Length: 149
Length: 423
Image (cartoon, rainbow over all chains, first blue to last red; front, side, top):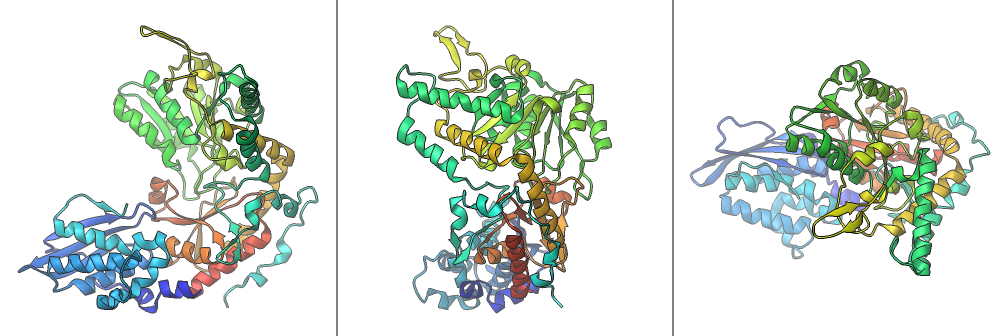
């Protein structure tokens, strides 16, 4: 069960039950939709860019504990960041959950480090990265729904 | 107090009929002795693919070790032997489905290819702009998408007969949707998600009354029910070998001879011709007209062994036992607070889909997997059905005759563990 505890850390369970920034955003400058073909989860991400920074970010949709917590913690992490900073965080996050990151790399990720256990569950990587792929699409201003494939 | 499996009235287990010795049957399936994450494998994903008895595995292996050669081509000993074994399988399939003739059996990759074959060969010839194809709201993507593709190509439209909250086809609505322009009805015999056994005889009668042919998707039905295509009078019936305890990559299309004969070929190539010149090609007769190229010979011989195995066990006996498992599992799962079964039709095969309050199937599946329990989670290639029940996904336990009452207890215990862990 220890790897399960590593996957479903307390903070992940908290965020999945009480997600932060789970709301639509009327004045979003960009929105994008993400879709996980494997489980049918859908997420909509709202983004407000102001003066070259992410002034606000929120999401809607429902999914598994991992994808909901990931979206919730994403919104917390990215407020105030520039798109370039957000992109760099995603790269590191992606490396961590796919087990490619260098040891200790998770430490600079702050709260996001709670997702390090995902690397032991390859089929759940898509759950952890759905909101992030969607974010990238919102930043790129793409109107095509993204999938985690 | 949370219900523990101990209070799930083990006394309610029906006494096993001595005629069906599940412990003995399990010994025929090598994989059932495997451990997953250190726990004995509990395999409840039979609707995705069934496990294979040793006889099937050995038959496929024997082809490569003793018989490997191409069929319908050589005059040499091996080719003759392989051709004979291959064609014997067709006769076994004919008997399995009670088809009138063996040439009504076409070997294909599986149900998906069988349906695509009908959509291409029958559909392209008979469906025109403004025509309609009628399906139901509980179809697998493989019985939706080929028809959508056909409709798009021809300017025809796809009509969908609705289902009830219990997961049963609403027959009156279905009947109303059979119109002047309906060219084909395509319906699943058993739902892969809900387990519903459709009233196919009635469906066929209603369609035939209006001279509309019917295709039955039998992927989920054939492993659980005795199928008699002549009694049903269906025009097409499709089977996937791997769900029938046979190998992957082999399946059957049954079609009435006169319907198959009226159809153009599906794919062109070797074996489906009788003569070829650059000016003109004469097509082969049934069933070869629809079997272009070297077929899956090893898979066919594996399927042959699966037919023998199932005949020896007796589908009547396995169906009875599976029904006892289904009742036991339905009772046991229904007692878990917060668990809701999706698909409560009166007539069901041993498939149980469920959702749990505040718990996503994906999380349920991951934690059950750590207990060695294999279930399917997701949309089961039936997204419109998920939408109908307003759920993004379900967890599905699909049972086979080698499953046991103890394994169902393990599932119930596992679900309690999920609730503890994530609750």
